[in-house]
Structures are given as C-alpha cells and as structure tokens.
Amino acid sequence: MPFCPECNTDYKENVFTCSQCKEDLLPGLAPTQVPEKVDWYVVESVPNEIAGLILKNVLEDEGIEVYLRTNEMPGYAGVKGNVGKSEWGDLLVPTYSVNHALESIKAYYDSIKEE
Image (tube, rainbow, N blue to C red; front, side, top):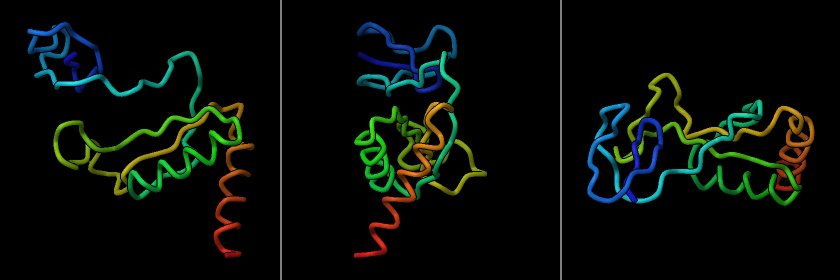
C-alpha cells in the first residue's frame, strides 16, 4: 500500500498523490506513528539507526513503551528533514516513563563501561 511521506496516510493501490498534502506517495507501509493521546518526551538522541534500535530494545526489555523517530526524510537517502539536527533520530517515551527510561539508559551505558 502506498503512503504519504508527509502525513503517513495509507492509500489504496493506483493512487499516486496525497489528497491532503499533494505529495507523491511512496511504496510500502507507512512508518509506525506516535499515538497522539500520549505526551511524548525525547530521552535520547541517537547518531544512527543501529544505536537507536539497541536503546529501543533496552527500554522495551524494561517494559517501557518507546518510539524511535528518525530525522531523515523517507525516500530521500539520508537527507535530514530538519537541517538543524545532526543526529539520526530520537528516542521518545511517554512522560510518565521518563525517569524509568533515563535510569535504564544510564544502567545500559554503565554496563558497557564495565566491560
């Protein structure tokens, strides 16, 4: 199913332009969206996708809901959507999980230093 890279709306096959944003649609499934009913907080910026996925797994293993958001524009081979951000992306958690997430990230980094 094609989707809009601007608003992440899914469309039926044979539709090529978003009716709202007027953007060309991209093939495949839209990336997971952040639920709107939760206040999200950036707990860590990550330099690349691998670092983001590692920390995402650390937080998920602790039972923390986490969203990994890229700063790259979909379909543009690494072009940043926000030129003011040098990081690849951000890890976001619900505000009610911030302290637990920060403690988990610190414990992970401390365990790496010990090895």
